[in-house]
Length: 250
Image (cartoon, rainbow, N blue to C red; front, top):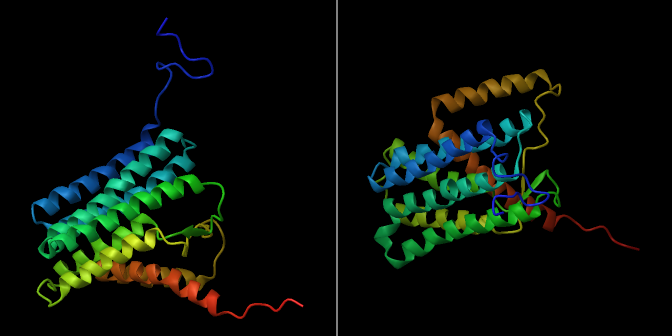
């Protein structure tokens, strides 16, 4: 009978999904979709903020799944599809609708570089799970790449820099850089060595207070500056390793 379950596979009636972690993923997907809609309506600052909201939600779904022991293959695939929309398609379209469309063919080609880079980065990440050092990402993570583009849009509108000469070329460079850096073999620190349950020096608490105050005072500038530094950190470490004297084998 066609309704008989496949041997070794749960029946459709018994299949299901974990609601809590996938709710965060769905919210991140909505934030990315909302960014696209707002870009089409010429509300570019709102679109940029929506991408950062998607980043926060994307960072929470995996942690919630681990804390509640609700990881699943469905959740992993859903997260990748959500990331493609929020950090691949959305930043590319926001950049294109804002300034890149005025550059003709070059504008949409560079926007596609970011979009394609995100797709390739996510596909490579999924195939490398369990076979790489968890302390490092190979290529710039797609949320950080999206933050480079969305952060530039955000600060330009928040501080009224939209009239600066040559701004479209700056956006073009950031968009191309983010797309290409996602598919390089440059290593970026994953922050997975940070354990909140470990004891830390008291000065770390003071540093956290200062960081929070800076973030609350100038959110767009602080966030954009952080992700720019993070994107450059991989190249700086790669250059340091390349310049470091190699041990002489006798």
